[in-house]
Image 1: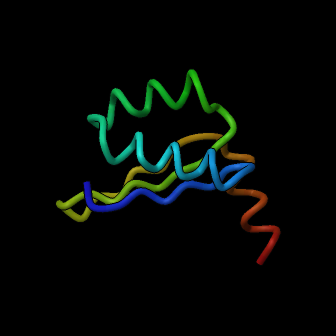
Image 2: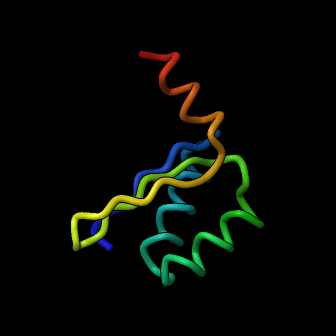
Image 3: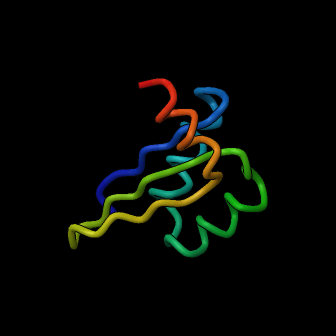
Length: 67
């Protein structure tokens, strides 16, 4: 994994989630975040140029509305 970008209610939640995504294997991180931080959205960028998107879709809608 190259990078994780997280949208959350607070900077602390976003930073925590980003660290989890970068440290744990992706599937383990995804399961942990689903259980512990369900109100986030994230983008994960991998070395093979793939992008994974996950989390609560309401955060994406808020981001679009803010544009």
